[in-house]
Length: 138
Image (cartoon, rainbow, N blue to C red):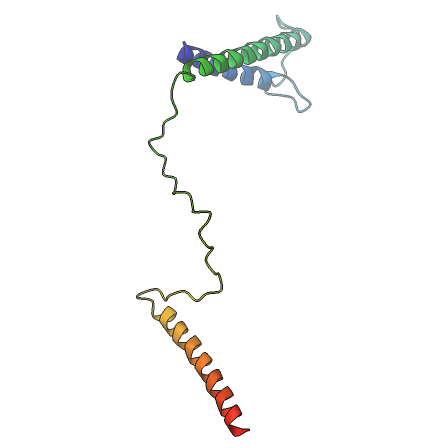
């Protein structure tokens, strides 16, 4: 039933788009004019297209509501699938937070990371040695 109504709604939607595009707008529409001496006058065609648009719009909205009701009825009996749940374990709220200013260990195999750590340690050592020399000179 659901599939049948979905197909009917797709057909109604295509018809609605076609009828809307055939209507004369300020730009002329897709109908392109024609002689008013035909079987259907321009006024009669406009009234027919307007009525057809209104009817198709009501059918489209009605089908949308019916499909929504059917979707709720069909999907309400199923349990939620938890097979792809890969959530991380909850963090311990009592554990201390990591210090963002603490130096981290160099990444193994990364020569730049190790060189940066050595340079930082060398600067700290030079500053300590300079302070010690300054105290000894006084």
